[in-house]
Amino acid sequence: MREFDYQRASDVAGAVALLGADPDTRFLGGGTNLVDLMKSGVERPARLVDIRELPLDEIEPTPGGGLRVGATVTNGDLAAHPEVRRRYPALAQAVLAGASGQLRNMATVGGNLLQRTRCGYFTDVTQPCNKRTPGSGCPAITGEHHNHAILGASDHCVAVHPSDMGVALTAFDAVVHYATADGPGELPLADFYLPVGDTPHRETALPAGALITGVSLPPAPVAAHSRYRKVRERASYAFAIGSLAAALDVQDGVVRDARLALGAVASRPWRAAAAERVLVGAPADAATYAAAADAELAAARPLPHNGYKVDLIRNLVVAVLSELAEEAAR
Amino acid sequence: MASSTSSVITLKINGEKYTLPVDHRTTLLDALRERLDLIGTKKGCDQGQCGACTVLLDGRRAVSCLQLAVAAEGREITTIEGVADGDRLHPVQQAFLDLDGFQCGYCTPGQICSAIGVIEEHAAGWPSAVTEDVRPEAGPPSLTPEEIRERMSGNLCRCGAYVSIVEAVARAAEVRVDERPAGAVAGAKEAVA
Image 1 (cartoon, rainbow over the protein chains, first blue to last red):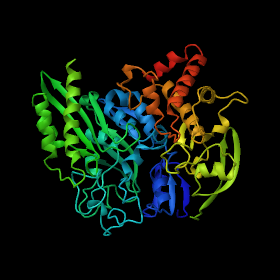
Image 2 (cartoon, each protein chain N blue to C red):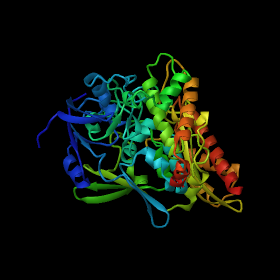
Image 3 (cartoon, rainbow over the protein chains, first blue to last red):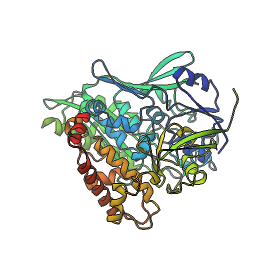
């Protein structure tokens, strides 16, 4: 590991000033991803600015039924919060489906959004990787890619975003708040992650030198009836091979509102807008759910070894929506 | 601003203060084992995947291999050496002994620190990934074997002593409930709702 300077920030302005626009400086939150990447040599910062003590650890209800979550709130505290569990149960479930209890107590909301892919070529510095070393190539496309993207990928990178939390936040139209030396700003999560294209090393639209200060969730009554379902290769403590955050409002047998986002299928949490368009106004039955999944998956471009994800996601959508509709009918 | 790659830090571990110079690259795990001779905390994978290095930070379980020592300054650190009350073992330690919650013992300090955290998280009403209904109205889940397995999934045991580990955690959780002052359980439920 490269030697590095360490500074502890006590307020947001100070943290932003310490970072400056220095590309060799990183903010340190829980460190569960960054420290690991520093050990493997993927990240080689010259300086860390520790932001864990910033006063950004509150979860506050907002008018109308939304929530504002500070950037340094831990995953553990987020999933335990009564208002998160009441207003956005799929968000609590998504967080609880990720990592282990120890890691959830360390990891922060801001860091979760900025975590890097677990693609084995990205984390192995002896391998080419367009995301880590632009222009070096992507061995995953012809190599080990059983857990890589089926949507939104390019010839330059097929890695998936590993977050569970981000999938639920995407389904619920979360907005990312940040601070820069020029003042605060915000980005809808839908615009936060950049398309892969030929620049997979550029992952977010966050301005250089910006510090994520929090995430806000707009009021969404439909979210009170929501679920996160994660499919993985063992029962616990593994990254998803496919996941779904879904919320459904059914009245008189007709879908009135629906929110769907998919995980482990793309370089970012994937809002299933095409599926939502099929759902709203349609009969709440399995045929509709299947048609909605098919509408979203029409754009899927699976690789030789991850075609199973198309069926997996289709089944996941039908199963979870069926369960939500059944529960609503009780 | 002067750049420096090392600092003199003071760590609070098991109620004692330790002052030492550290290279910033030093993890809390390596500081404990290599610098302070607190070798109860074990190094397994060193990647946050096995749980052998689990300690309590401000009372909550965390993996010390991904925690930089310099960033742990100011926090209350509890290691396996600090969980007993003098000669009286912690209820989780006693339950692991009574129910054979280990074979080789290498993962055990991490298992015990993690279990202490699990029991506190559960007592505070935290749901888990296998909790059927996470809404606060549903009330706190009971600590079933399925709940224990899920909550302890960050601690691997290469000997495969899991069956006894689950029994030991369940036993220790019962002890905690029995020893809680009257009214404390109801209070915990109110805090959750």
